[in-house]
Image (tube, rainbow, N blue to C red; front, side, top):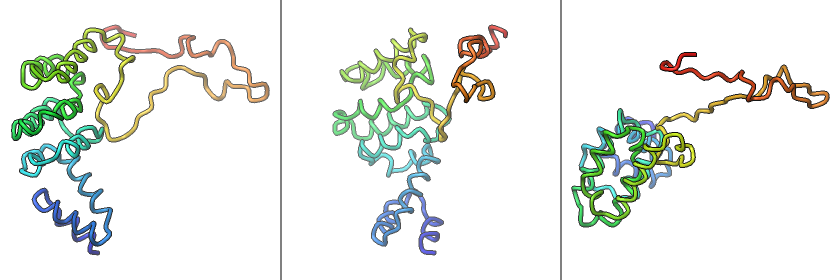
Length: 199
């Protein structure tokens, strides 16, 4: 009952106090609820003073989470810039770690060209290395699969499995473990469609 009541009263303004009470009275679910609340409403959270005062590790833990909800990576970038500008001298040392959590390649050239002319990307050595990565990734799309990482993942709160090729179970002989040669995964049964290429 107490936990349910505290969840119903949770807001960005009182979250820190309520989560502390949850720790005090052994209510770990309250902390998880708070994290989910922030991830689901991150843009609203980013307008608060609490957001501006986050340490870099806590901010990174939110930004690296694939289930964080935001319409675009560009909006996240602007929020992180606001956090950085709030206390540049003390955040310079770790700023590359924070900005590295934005999925620039998902947004493409518009976000990359917008970011690369701003501080800290023009002077910070490690941020410059990030810019180089974006350029290499975008200019070599056919090799993108070689550098898949947190920088290139699509944000989504559910894991997805994409299956291509293979054989149907009904075509597999369990008696002799033989695979019909005509059903190997490169036989053309896996078809790919693109609106610009037709069938």
